[in-house]
Each structure stands twice: as C-alpha cells, then as structure tokens.
Image 1 (cartoon, rainbow, N blue to C red):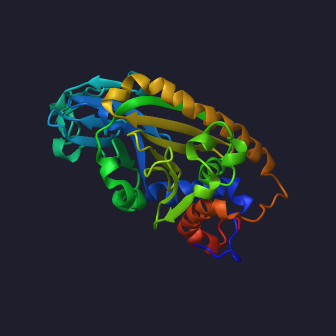
Image 2: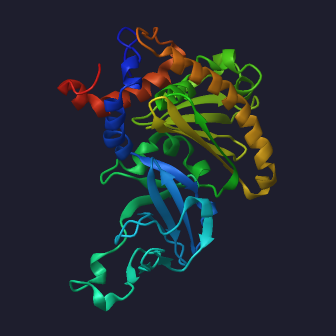
Image 3: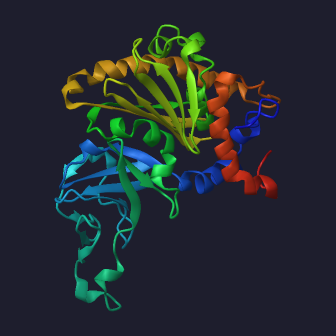
Length: 349
C-alpha cells in the first residue's frame, strides 16, 4: 500500500482519454476473468448467448455437465449461433443459421452443408469453435478474454482466503439488475470501494447494513481487498470485496451473495450489472432483496454521475482519507498494469 505521505488518486486525465480506454481493454480487461452468468441458470444440455465488452460469447453445458465458453461466431462466416435475447435454451447441437455448419456442445464440427463441394479439400478438424477460458467460482460463470489471464484463484485471493467455505455453498439466482450509468467505469468502481462516503451518502440504506464506521475493518490481498463489518451485533461479518478490474463481491452471513460489476461502454458511460444469489429456499425473496440493493445503488448513481460532470478540465482530486484505502489499493493494481505505457509516454500522466 502507498504511504500516507505519497498516496494519491489516479489523475483525472486517465478518465477521459480514448487512448487510455483502448489500453485498458487490451492490457487490463484481458488480464482478468469476468463473471458473465449464474451457474445455476445453465443446466446440462443448455446453451446461452451473452455479450461481454462487445464480444459475443456462447456458454454451453453438455449433458455430462461440462461447461465451456466459445466465441459466438461460426468459423465459416462469423454469424452467431444464438442471440442473447433467446436466454437459456435446451440444445443438443449448434447449427449455424447461415450455412448450416453443425457443432456439438464441445465445439467440434460435426458436419458442413454440401461438404464435398468446397473448392479445396475440406478438413472438419481444422474448424473447431474458438474456445475461451471458462470456470465456475462462487456459483458464477467466469470467462477470460485474453490468452494469458492471471489464475482465477489469484484474482479471488482474499475471498478464497477469508470465505472459501461460504463461497463453495450452492446458490441459485435470486434476482438480476442491469442499468447504464452516465460515468466512466473507474468513477463507479472507485465509488463502490469508497468507505468514506457510506455514512454520509447512505444514512438510511447501506449505512444501516454496514453499521458504525468505528467497526469498519480493512484487509488487503495481492489482487482483492475487503471491508468487513459486524453483522447484526453478532460474531459473523458482512464482507464487501473489491476485485479487479471492476467487480465487487458482497457476502452476507445469511447465505446471500451479490456480484456488482461496472463494464465500460464509452468514456462517459458504463453498464452496471448486479447478480443476487442465495440458497434455494430464499428464491421467493429475490425481488424484495434486490429492491433493497437498488435503493442504495440509486443513491450512488446520482453521486457518480455528478462526479463525471466534475472530472473536467482543471480538476485535481483532493487527498485520500484512510477510509479510501481500498480505492488506492485497486488503483495501484491498475497503474501497475499500465506502467509500461506511462513510461513510454503513450498515455496521459
């Protein structure tokens, strides 16, 4: 962690540069795993099309329960096999709607229409689907976009160290929420790591959940950090983990788990997605529990969109508070990933 004498927030210029946004996609997003769906929402023998940072992804779970992720495009002419609007659908074979190339759920080409008539000799084995890294942790499906991401268990170092048993519990999807925020993703991510504002900005919502500031406890891993607060005056803790590059994992002692992420859209826009998971017996409570979260998320929306308007020419951030240490931790990770481009002068300082 930076010392109090040297600690400083990222310069505002990094929040408004197209060049920086391109570098983030290439050198930050590609280094990490990204939650993309609830594992319980994809039973064996089903597929689901989703989109991640503009990339069409196809999730497939075969009848043996093996989960895989592929680029959602046929290797012949790039047409998608399924569309996100279809949701999760039962499927035994993937058939391209353009030219009928047919694949199994393991990504192997089974047949191509009029296969004997290709101009050159045709080899099915030369045309598998493009596989992406795919794993399940905390009842969520995580996908890697880059060829060499850090290990997922490293990315989740502190959650697995502090709550491995709780994360391994089976959970079903209780509710899902998505909305667009009119701010750079880093502003939204910073805000959700910001424990300095909770008592002031959320006095009747999140502050009641987390309790008095004097009970706040911060812990730091290599990649993740956590705010721990007592739960209902008991011995258990409510844990809020910050994870790179833009994720937040909330873990309640009563079995609930939430994942909040802020996916970049444009320099002044990001998509917030919230999964709420929990035990099967709480499934009927999902919408009510999500409504509680949406209350404080709406309060945060007003703040981050205001900050976006203020991050203009001539603005310089003030000094960090001790309750903003989690912001500094995640910003240090971000800066380290982009340090070669700082040094080369290819991005604003």
